[in-house]
Length: 297
Image (cartoon, rainbow, N blue to C red):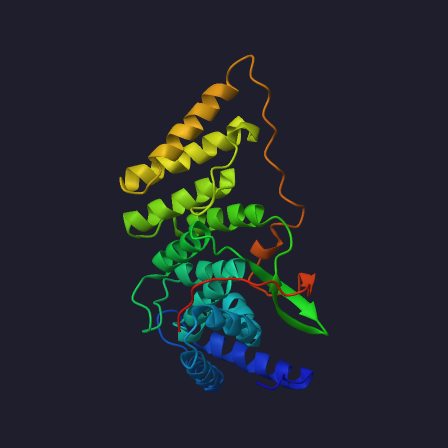
């Protein structure tokens, strides 16, 4: 798609705002701007359907998503909650591509307005949020992308700082956004497991982390999430993790035990991706990093 000129982009934004303002809660969006976005989405889906590799699909989605940035911003700041099949589809694409915080911004709006998913998806928005983020972290596919800028254009670029800090924030936000929503217990257990693992720096496929250097407050947070995961799903696979964390806490409580190092503080701007859905440039584009993830059409 050829980039729009500033004048064309401004006019498109005005038309998108008009569509959002004219479409009340509970009905599907209507108007030329929405029709054009649905046509674009259909064309992009056709491009994706020609690719068999899930990894390559995710890469293409990361390239396509900036073309929807204005639509995301307009919908989430000007919309009244009208059904938007473009937005709900793009939410899932964000998770597939690794743009987790941008996807969570959309999810917050979608869930707050009780918007249904597009017909392509059978799960509820909350179930999708829980499944996609927990799976991405537990399977070792956590390679977050944020909005960056190169040559005056916004794009999605790799997060270059502490991935564990980002994961802890994103997974906790997913829990907060979906806390009051109905979702399968097994999925919810998986999210609690992922939060605990991110807290102590573990992934499903990695070796056991050294818990001796983690502060007791952090260990207690992890233990709470592990215990909740076990309550929700007895087959969640966290029993040994609970035992390890309990042993580490007991050792940390002994008078002769060395004081564990405090949990690393979040970088000052680590919460930047979680602020608003407005995809403002957050970083200059660094060299691209290889990533592996699963994606869908």
